[in-house]
Length: 539
Image (cartoon, rainbow, N blue to C red; front, side):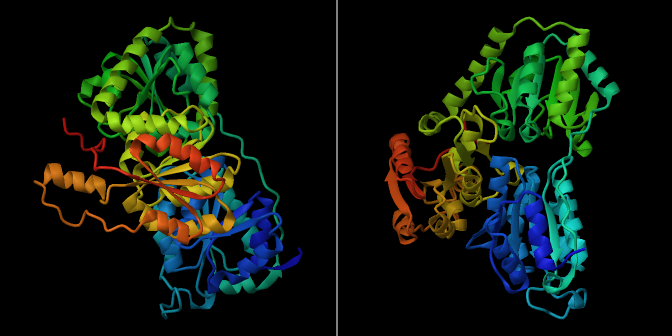
């Protein structure tokens, strides 16, 4: 075995696994790792953020846009705790993010002496928001631990992992072998389960499909389309499944989100439901309105959790759908067209949307018109972001990014920066609220320093808008703690060396085109009144 430091073992193994970017912020316990990354900087780019929270958000955006593992690195204690918001978001949205966390010196572990940045049992902090985490204390263990992290990230459900290395282990010299990367082919689903599922779906006269984020993760667009067209099934997606079919596909009804639920019009007539890569969490209006469910998911714990399942298939969505289609073709013929029926369902959903939020829909259409199909939108926790979940047309997978059920305020801008790093040839737009944008406004510095040309659209209603709407309609207008005292966002952008612009709501499309033409990081402020969110509908 060659001799190397623990930090070199870490850097060389990351490079071996194909890592090309690490999002990080320096600190005493990880400086040896920084020095080792200096050795491999021609292969692995280091991007220094201005807050540890942004390290995991940027890694998450990178992962979601590229499908590759996003890597972040922080010091222990406050650095690691700051990074938990982004790691929790990655956990909620099944995103492959590796967090490398420093530790206190290995000789002080477990003694509670109050060492700098010490958190007792730090591994336990991460257990609820990671698929796997581990601490190494020997140089020779580091390549194997990193390799295992990548195995966890590339098999089954791709949730984040955390790996801890004490500073003395990073600095120590020892024997270590760098391990070659591996390919992890998706598992084949159980044939008997596929047969049972095909029989149910082949008998159905009005089947439906709900496609979630698992279909995007597995790259199952072609397979889902082929199954849907064979069955002539009405297709719904979750917010994370947007783009699995093009927005104008003749079988796509719409997106199920919050209180905007086209599923309520689909289920009553549906006699079989195929759920793929989704937790199946939506409101059921009557117990007898749920048809027999065939549920495909990489995570066996999700099957039957929220709705009773007739057939559960554990496996990768792409592979399982291929197997399912092969079996369907063997036992049945393609169904007769339901194009007109599905068009009626879609028109009903579109009309409801327009009645609820016509002003928001117009802005969303203007944003869509300024973008190419393969440009990327990161939809933040703000009114236009919420309505974009159901109204923004998406035609290409991995071009619409959300924080899933974690609903993380402040994630949109740093996530967009990570997406832009991963896809430098695409245009990236972050839809931010004024409240959330202030969580990570300092990352304008990161954008300017590295030339990360994402556009932050900051919708400014001078409030935590959804909470103020709640006070207006649920608490008799008793306002407290929901208004905001904002800076001049354009001046703040300019102070960071970033282009600052303003636009009226009806000029957002033209303003976006101007922002893209700047070929620079841009903050585009749009002032809005407070408007109804889709989860607090007042009719």
